[in-house]
Length: 206
Image (cartoon, rainbow, N blue to C red; front, side, top):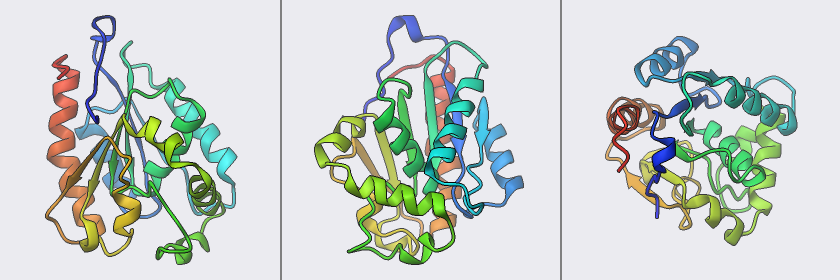
């Protein structure tokens, strides 16, 4: 569970796509992260425009299609709301993404129980994404969850509820001892995620 398995045929390096969150990091920081992580493509869903979930997913599909830096499998780093968008895409397109690194990700939202209402007011796409993910069955999410590593600061995140960050069906949950949503994202991207992607780009598929 949570193990990234790549066949011999695919050992040509991974195609890394980064999907931005709602407003966690400024644009320049996302671009810097993309460079540091060796990403083929950085996708900004532009959460605060008035486009809905369908348009956000179409944009992600284009970004994946444009990630042509090599012939390897697609690995996505989803930041905060971006991770939820990637999960929704994975549920609709089961075979296109090899693995998702969810960094502070909104993976299992439930508006009846969690503190996410205020975020849905600012983005049509985010609200529709949350509503769609909330309706998905646990069994359906568990299938995609085998290909997810979820990084979480738990209750210390202070923005995304622990229950949304750490779904029981995720393949692997990594609890990070950094307080705060944005500091945790920065720390994880530049340490554990960076190391794992460097291993994958170096064709060390463990």
